[in-house]
Image (cartoon, rainbow, N blue to C red; front, side):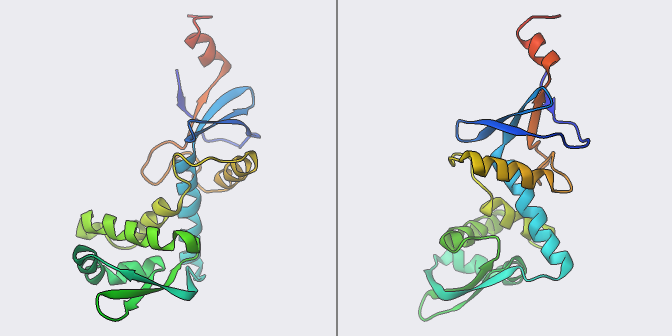
Length: 199
């Protein structure tokens, strides 16, 4: 039966196709792999940001042109309550006139185009999170969650190969930060059982 791919020396993984714009079907050492593209990307981004924090590298990029945002009352409240967490995550935002704010820096792992949506998604998650889960590694996890490749995104073969390569280079490639498996392996024996070729 299907099981999480086992942690051992990584054999070559060859992507075959993308399924439902959510999973990557791949082959490795005679087994079939199903890779969850969001969970895999989340693991890659999480370790990239965590590595930058641990090494003291810059995790924030200053925008050439600040993004002017008009926040709702609830978003403003969440912003005020979580400013240190947002700054620790790589966001820097300042008041900019009446009811407006200027987003001046975003995490280096976030593309400029995704800057506003990632920031608003962070605010939404922080507003729902318990106070003890709004600091440290949890903030890094939130950035990873909102900047990872999403389920539903179409990936080219080159993007699939790149994601797999980056995943295998992480310290823990077999689970995402939620603890969900990033990939499931089906061996030839598993397939024979599924197709009732053997008991």
